[in-house]
Amino acid sequence: MTTTRTTRRLLCQAVGLLAAGPLAGRAARASLREPLGAASASGAADAIARLAFVNTHTGERLDVVYREGTRYLADAISAIDRLLRDHRSGDVHPIDRGLLDQLDRLAALLGAGARPFHVISGYRSPATNAKLAARSGGVASNSLHTAGRAIDVRLPGMALSDLHRAALSMQAGGVGFYSRSDFVHLDSGRVRRW
Image 1: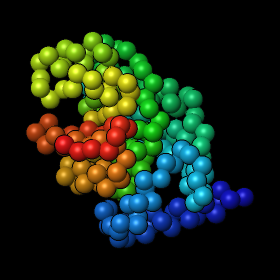
Image 2 (image 1 turned 60 degrees about the vertical axis):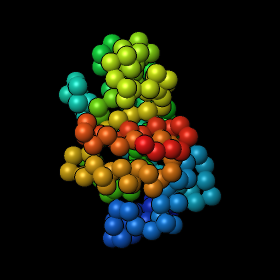
Image 3 (image 1 turned 120 degrees about the vertical axis):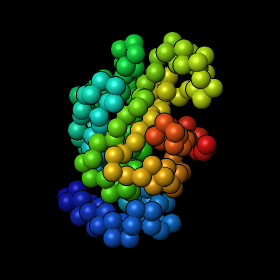
């Protein structure tokens, strides 16, 4: 079937990207803007998507295939939602699947393999977000974290500036650079940077 052909094609593209360097080529970056969870003419929707995380607050780890083609795997999505919960309140909220696909594309772009994203903040309950916003000017009162549409991450072994540049190159949503706090913010909102 086309799955084998698509898998071979994606592996060849990945090898090409790795050989060319993590931020190579406008065409390579443009192809990463294509939503992987949606059916596409290129057949990228046949791909298997895997994410690995370490929650820096709880120490929990997760390495899971969360999507096969266009089908999101319910058990895996539930495990991701749980790991990315508000660690202050324990509240669990659905994480935007488009955000997960952004992370998957980012890991592929960086050649991160199975290295886990270290998560500083995933979902934040409105109450937690309000407390943080009252204490810090760096927390938006209408943060996309409260909708499960934002995540703050780092990738150990990867320069934060490289992670930031790669995220910007995807043109997939909001990207913030927090060098003092050692993380990059990604969200599935409109394309913007800070």
